[in-house]
Image (cartoon, rainbow, N blue to C red; front, side, top):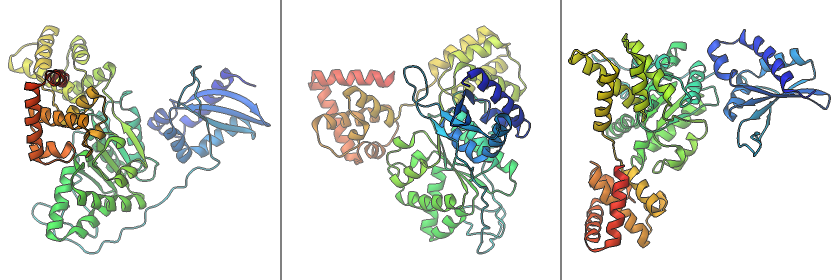
Length: 483
């Protein structure tokens, strides 16, 4: 028996059973994407092969649903029924997946956290409990610092974020006990990393009222660690964080090439939380492999769990985001206007919502009806006037791409002529196009001081005036940066 039609029929029968015993959202997330591939006889066994989107699906199904899968397969195919996973990975010329993974015989057992011993109670001031100065308490009650507006219900799902959102919902149901620990959410600015991380925190609190959830920015964490270090209360600071059940740290990339002591403290906290099966959620604008300046041992631990990237939303998702925003605010708008905004603002979610707010403000302040013509005029001005932040990282990339060099070589200590010139150009344009202080420019361009940056800028200016070839390079790079 080898039939795709038969495999589809068998799998649909299994789904009918599974659908009745698990929550609808979990069914949609983890079972609807599965595709039946084949049903074959092998060594007196009937093997149903299912195609999964990724290894994470395989790990999760094994951990959470292996028992029900096994039971339904046995019921449908008899005692000889077997299940095989086919991971959708590298495809060959015939568009067939190359790798397959067999379902393990047993899933993971549920584990429980041990109780947390707290050394002593703390006093409560007029402003409530200060989480940064707490050495411990008998029952930890803190402000989770979660943004009220950022919930999972208003985080619009699309192809650009489906894996991250699905993983987040799974984590909220069983924080710290899934294979998605830590969860690293990364992507460019304005794509919803902070929103999603916060939403996971809210959903966790909703499902587990006893869990201690805390959201902090990387800058906040660093400043509070510095304060505790100066006050001689570092151990209390670390102990407090070790009491948290779900720790969310936003924008970890800001620790790059700085805060070695903060990174050391975080490393200690990370190890404790992970060993105690507590959930860690990190956001970054870069993938782990690109987090230069973060300690290798931290980067390696970020790779232990799930790395989920957020992409720029497609036009369908952008339309849904606008519709959701309008519904939330109780505002009606012609679909042609929504569509026009979605098609013309294609950079990130933040600018998309900004364009919508600008249009509503134009309509309200000028007492004009929202029409397609008004939207067209506003979008033209919005796109023209929206500033594009030019970063040092972006300038380095443009320079390195132009000279076919790696960014790592630019940040190294090598004194090769071509790399020195590229490094000096990066410093020159960073000073010209960013508001970063010279010390920051030098730090990111090979760990140089501000005097070296000034010297580099002077050298580049002299070469532009005296060397025709060099001037041509500088003009080309300048145009690419501004594009």
